[in-house]
Amino acid sequence: MTLLAIVLAILLDQLLGEPKRLHPLVGFGRLANTLEPLLRRAERTIRKYIVRADELPTDYRVAGALGWLLLVPVFTAILYWALLHRLEVLGAFWELLISALVVYFCIGGRSLAEHARAVARPLSKEPLSSNDIDDARNQLSRIVSRDTAALESEGIAKATVESVLENASDAILAPIFWFSIAGIPGVLLYRFANTLDAMWGYKNQHYRYFGWAAARMDDVLNWMPARCCALSYAITGNWKTAIRCWQRQAPLCESPNAGPVMASGAGAMGISLGGPACYEGLEVMRPELGEGRAARSEDIDAALKLVWRATILWLCIIAIVQLS
Image (tube, rainbow, N blue to C red):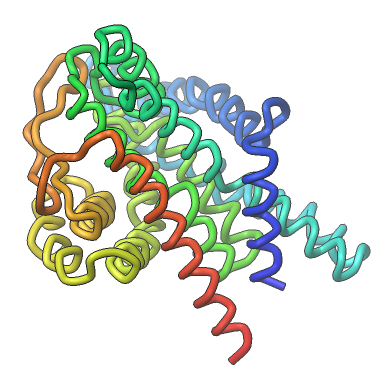
């Protein structure tokens, strides 16, 4: 039933894409936005009774950790408890359908491909005009957090390929991993944690401490899926180069999970990623990832195909495990 639910979820995702209205994760995001100021206010109030008012720190680590506990494991348990009663009454067919719908809401393969191809489309035009570059920059700004205004075609292609390789792990393979391991509660807990990291896991002044727990727990939950993703990129691409890049370059990356995924993916494709990038006006020098020529516009589609091969590989492995 696990494999069938995943296949149905992928088919729904490819046919329908992300729901335009009433997406459960949108409601979850609104709940998180509502809870955040309440948690900050509660921590300030409690600290007033512990330390002098003029010695109050600006550290909201406790509030952020409490918010993560309430919004991820507690909310997941409540939601699953509500579903469980229905599953017990409805029977196997409805259990399969509800499981497929839950996984469908937790993955975003079609959305990832649509956003990536929206960048690739203007870059593929010949001759390439300044308007095409501006269009590609605008499309790229929707899927990455870096500054895109000064990027040229090579930088745009590189950033898009990086986004495809990294987000495929978060948006497709990790949800499949956690559903296969822990069913509906597993995939719900992962998706809520990942969504909260996307909202709170920044290193700016506002979220550096408040979002600390969300960022760390997302790292923990993505540790194994990311390495399985990196391994599947290597298996379905250039094995030797992917493994070599993973071993040598991933430890140089700041992110413990994006490093293996992007290094292996770039090596599997035989291209170079990484290098300088600008975030909020500050240039950050990131390690070079992969080997070979610089990424080009056609590599965006090649990256999407690599993700598809990795996904099919995972489905085959799940099928073998279920049949054994």
